[in-house]
Length: 295
Ligand code: GDP
Image (cartoon, rainbow, N blue to C red):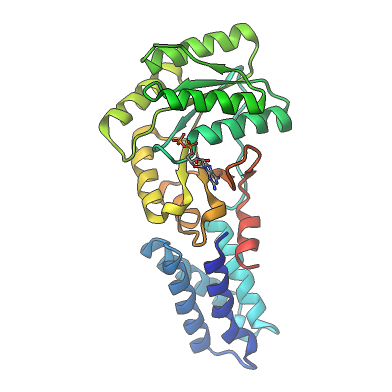
């Protein structure tokens, strides 16, 4: 996970760590290296530039030049700034209401159905909830079957309506069913498309308006880097979602989406997917991720 970035940052700091006396020029060179590392990780240009500017200000403010261990101090400043860039502290999902209604949004293949199952399992096992999964991807029979398989593995029932092609009606009926059957969380999986298109946006907006979800979670493949960030922006402009789910982090050697998304859409990353198995999800902790990146 983010191996390239870790290696690049580590080599950026070599210059400072080995040096007896540190000069402002050394710091400037290191920061240039850090910026290149961020750009190679597919971090947005503006964000990378601001990042190094902020680090420089903090470094001068902390009087790095006169520190006993300037290299270590710089690493700490970069680490704190990385954590800040990714959102600072972990943010939970809102489960206060009965039932809590969670709407999943995102492109086809982003990992929505898999994550819906992972979330149901997490809520069942870690939060003692009784979730109901809802098959709102009505166009692909395979998608409904996939959710059924996932539900079975997790031990969570799946609400489907054979032959009904209206996801708004299905979602509303599912919430009614959840109330009568005592489910405290409803997770609505929806249809994605291969790229952002108007029909998909209209449909998901209509579902949002009809069921008034407490959480809209935008699911995105972290391996798509800047595309992930651009897609997040388009979905957020339409849906004003509550949080981001970054999937496939296990295959992401670069990390650009994780580092840019928060700043671009101003919404927290709430969970990350770290594998195909249904227990491969983690609550996203920006500070722990920053520690990992700087190894
Ligand atoms: P959907 O079309 O958005 O519902 O996407 P799916 O849930 O069907 O996922 C698409 C593919 O990505 C499947 O092959 C999943 O097994 C895979 N996938 C989903 N999440 C992860 C993850 O966190 N890591 C990895 N490696 N694969 C994932």
